[in-house]
Amino acid sequence: MDVLDDLMAAARTGDAAAYRQFLAEVAVRVRSRLASKIGADSELEDLVQEVLIAVHQKRHTHDPSRPVAPWLNAIAGYKLIDHWRRRGRSPIELDDSADMAVAADSMAGLDVDSLLDQLPDHQAEAIRLTHIDGLTSSEAGEQLGVGTSAMKLRVHRGLNRLKALIAEDEA
Amino acid sequence: MSTTDDLIEQLAASAPPPQRSLGRFLLPLAMAMLLCTFGVAMLLEGAFAPAASDGLAPIMVKWGFSLALLAMSAGALWAIGQPGRRTSEATRALAIPFALVALLLVLELVVGGRPFPGTTWQRCLIAMAMMSPLAFAGAIMAARWLAPTQLRRAGMVAGLYGGAVAMTAYVPFCPGHGMAYLAVFYCLPILAMAGLGWILGPRLLRW
Image 1 (cartoon, chains in turn yellow, cyan):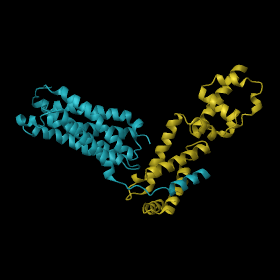
Image 2 (cartoon, one colour; image 1 turned 120 degrees about the horizontal axis):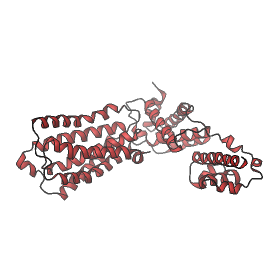
Image 3 (cartoon, rainbow over the protein chains, first blue to last red; image 1 turned 180 degrees about the vertical axis):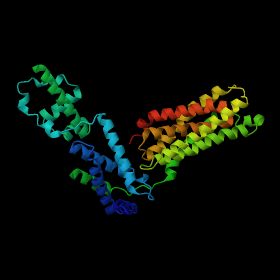
Image 4 (cartoon, rainbow over the protein chains, first blue to last red; image 1 turned 180 degrees about the horizontal axis):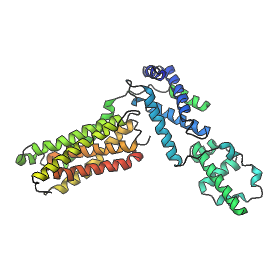
């Protein structure tokens, strides 16, 4: 019998320790299941947390007479698709280190403000907060009221657009 | 990683799990049914008046269809709301009442049709258009308490439930009879509501 079934059964009787162990096991399984489908680590961890919250909020929809694994997999699959839907159809590899590694001096001599003005407002704001004001993605996200992943995506897309603009200027 | 561990601690420390409860799922469905039944009864007069001239048979045929669809769609919605369940059979089975109507319609057309569409079809369509969304809303509330992972399918089945409830509520006031009437003024509005549910499902049911 799957350990998840035992832990869920114990949690149902009000055993908080079993429930904690259940959630930890869920996190491990979901992380390994989704790792190959999600690019950046931070995004994977966001998604693992979303699945944990969903499992917690919807745990009354699990039928005790059935195994937990198919129920959990369906929730994880749903949250993965929802995540892709929110982020847009094309799965983009979000590489934080590459985005953060745009060295300050690579923009030296450029009129950054006028370049940023050419970006959509939300992307320009995202870059200002993270690359000029020096906030982390999660701090900037909090300030603008969007999630960390969405924030990183804005920065990523904004930087790509900036690079394209600079290339156009140089050409 | 530590934030995930913190989250697990927080979740584990919260209240004990709510019970899995069929009653909690059925409550909004029953409320929708009551609301539509009383709504129609307050707006219209002469419940079962058509039975005086035609007997109870036409009402029973219509109720046979609508109550079967109502029960089957509620059952399918219950299954669709529980992640990891196989739901394709329950969903496909919802075509059976429609297939039966289609079969009987063909027989009726072969034998010789009844007068169509009669005089009260507009009232019938208005009742369906007013009551279906109400009952649909109840089905959406019931589904939102669960965790549907196929939102279009869940929305479509909620639409079928909405249409079936509206029909069940209006049937005692309906003097129209014949399969052509049932197909055009009941089945088509129900399918339209199901289509609307299919479209709106991802918006209304996302969790």
